[in-house]
Length: 352
Image 1: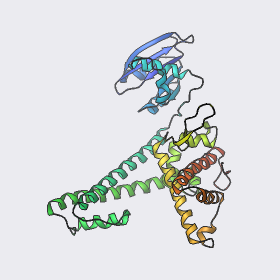
Image 2 (image 1 turned 30 degrees about the vertical axis):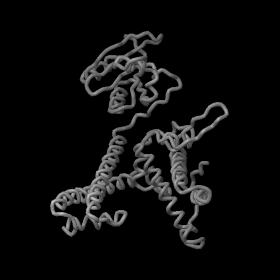
Image 3 (image 1 turned 135 degrees about the vertical axis):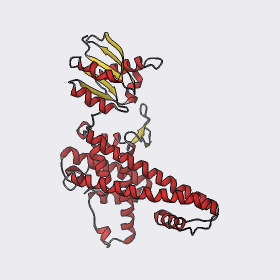
Image 4 (image 1 turned 90 degrees about the vertical axis):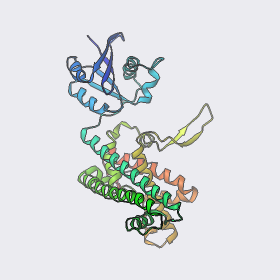
């Protein structure tokens, strides 16, 4: 068997391999059980293996790379056009094999175990934050049915939770017992989230790249650590705008001929990273609006930099919601410049 390229359709139990030789003729079509995959590729000479960037793909990419093969991972949406007619495992593997040979295909860098573990920690935190929000909104909705409305924000929610746990809320006894369950869950999630925040902050402080990124306004330890673990190879982006586009922070284009239409942002790529950049942009916009309200002579207004000067000028022309997204994209471009040029925030060029 002299396969030069093999497409491997990953699964939980049954894998499908499709291989072609240098002339494009099919030489391998085989179903493999999970325990057979490593032994099958160990017996093969070094070849190119195409994978879809799906669940467990990075693990198998590391395994196959360790066996001496060249692994090419591709986004699922880039492989889909090569699937002919109905979907089967065999046709999926053939599509992966075909897509891996395309000269214009964009490939996904392989993450290390440490990077995957870091992103996994962020996903655990995100899940806990969603569960905390669900418990909080459920409590507020239930007590509102009995005329109890707390103040907005975290402080109002904390007072409401304390009243429930102390049994001082004016609702029927039957409901009070259920609310206490949700309040205890809310308090426990608060403690776990704080513990994860401390762990992520410690990891960020121990990493030299994350420490450089935390100097950028709007980027804290959680965002810095997410960038270090989520951005495997910033050099593969040709420009800062390419990095922002990968994060889904650039407008969606629906253009034809001389008609150019720019819509809302694409929201492509890593949702968690994009959300952190948007939160950083929102923090910047809020701080500059406070500085503008406090007057030109205030300490906040006098702390200026090329980034804050650009944002101040933008807020004069655009609404805050638009400025937040623009600030998030600007932060992404600054981060790309720092990562690719290995400089700090003050020495990095201000991307356009």
